Length: 548
Image (cartoon, rainbow, N blue to C red; front, side, top):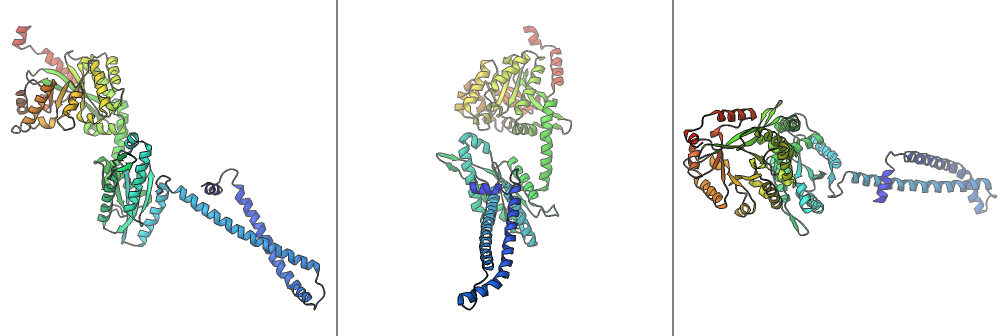
């Protein structure tokens, strides 16, 4: 390796090295001139001296001219020197070429997996495309871009040594399926690319290979005593894209496959997808949306809306759930189903949540002091061990009573580190904050977790509640959840009450809180305050007036 590196260094233009090749070339030119002069002199002198020397040795001539004989011997020495120098130059040139080849191989190879790197595969794809064009309409080039899903979590959970082993095994499995005619490269990080040719129009072969790669890599990787589960997302692109009249170059083909790979990743991972032209428009829109989201957080474009929470037996308003809305000057009103997952992916969900909670606390300070405020928390936020302290700091800064504040966490949060979740919940409850388990009934939590984690209430998922009006569908399941909550001493909230029929079924189940469009759609702070002022101005019912 040291010899290769040293030889390769002489090929680079670096200070102190630039004059060495020129000096060597000048030296070689002088040697060549000496050798040519020696050859010419040898021919001229030998033609005169050699016959006389031969006759002298035979005894038929007088003693030869010593000066010419010495000159002949000198010419012979110079010829021997020139030949040896020529041989040395050939050996040096061979070593230099080998060093160049080794340096090029090192520059175009991935040191971990041994396959090509991005620098190495791009020209190889270009040569494959050129060869395909020479075949006319008989061949296409397929490029597969392969990305390991959640590779960072593998490094975090199992260590970088295990991560490296996964990368090596992934490259081995890809190469085994690709065969000798294909080319494979590690593009960087956890991303691989491979290219191969197939008969024009036979995309089923590329589909089969992509499916085989996804299945092969999904087999667990054994690293010492660990079994690491791996999935990949694969994007495919072809050199004959129907929507493009011109043939793509290597960089364009990689770009298309990259777009298709992210499409596969966004639609569930552990799958493959072909590039389609509309995907490029989606990527541009997504990039604009990402930029707009970051800008919107700083500009205050995200505002809290409030949905009423009602005691379904008395009809009394008991609190509000805060919901996020994004009013963008560029995209209009953006659904939370779009910007919440995007904020989680970009890692700005905590910043977004803090800004909304801060605004909601200021709004809620102007409400009746008996009304509660509940907010939804992302599972990603619960990975932060300082989350409870951040919430308590927001409450302190706003001067908002903790007993009026509730956080709602989904059952998917229970897949995270349960010990961390328990610590966070306990810290919040110790300060008076209530904690609700949201979307209960979707199948993630167990009875043991409900008993181990100190929740204050359960919220039935809207998918069960919304069907109660359909001839009693799901009524037994909802009744079972209510009975479970009653047995655990946990009050129940039913979300998604859309009509009077569902409300009537819920009223038969006991004392519940409820929310949904049956009580009105979520409103912004101004409309919510107007609703509360109007309600306060209403005359009290006769029963309450008599009790007062």
